[in-house]
Length: 214
Image (cartoon, rainbow, N blue to C red):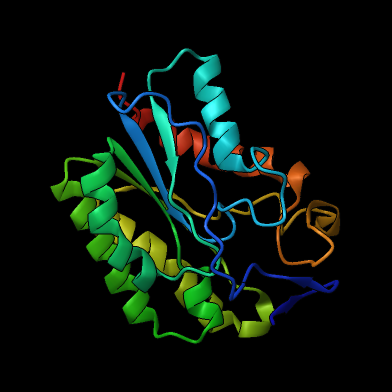
């Protein structure tokens, strides 16, 4: 387990509990497909309180015709997301794909070039299916070493630049690096709590909104 200063751990779980999808609406509505890990799978939260569910509520409040499909699985890696993506694209035919994966790759010691290749493939598969893509980046704690942390951070920006996709540089900005991050994590000190979910949505929304169908 990776510990941040102050005893805070970064998200990493071996569990494979799939989140319930946020209310999807009718199938004929354009979809935003979220392919993520425990950060998007409502791990440890009451159902309907995670950032993905808050996104659906926000869209509904704006009377948007867009539905949200949460295909996130706790503990998932970019390899897992890559293997699952083709079937998800066929099933949901999304207008937008949000890729929130990569943290578990680093925590399992997987090669960064593998993470980069998997993300690139996911972007291209999504584009071939007619979807716009948003990559949600993560960062590793300092005990991984400054060089590794920088190289890991650059994986997301490198893929986003090469593939010309939208990017959220750090999903947990304002959560893991805030003045008192322990207040925004569950007792396991691994997963953001309910209070953190609006911050996570606020980090995603500016990059996601321009991609949504009008």
